[in-house]
Amino acid sequence: MPETMKPYLPTIGLFLLIVYLGVQALTGQRGLLSGNQRDAMLELREHELAVLAEQRHDLELRVRYLRSGHLSRDMLEERARVVLGFSDPRDYVIRTTTATVPQASVAAS
Picture 1 (cartoon, helix red, strand yellow):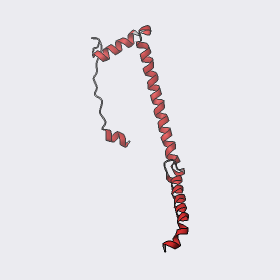
Picture 2 (cartoon, rainbow, N blue to C red):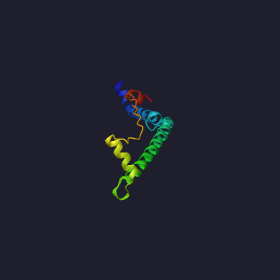
Picture 3 (cartoon, rainbow, N blue to C red):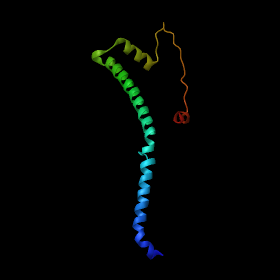
Picture 4 (cartoon, helix red, strand yellow):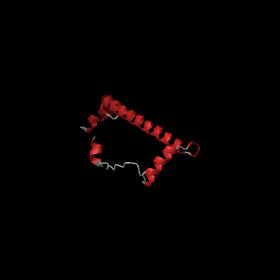
């Protein structure tokens, strides 16, 4: 029986290779059927990029106001109060605690 199968072994090997590549082309990481998932991930990453760009712009603006050439008295006073924990005697200070979210629930959402 092995002697009669020898001529068909390359054909069977090529057939299995074609089937494997076909399955990967449809269901693989970059396959045709995973396009919606990639589009959703792209939209999520673009939203994250927009949020980070806005945060960066805000931080750059704050840094510009704290530089010695463009020192803003209000910004300096605000940062000194935050860092040193001081407040003006006329200020009303309301302390709040931030709720910590467990990492497992953050990863699930």
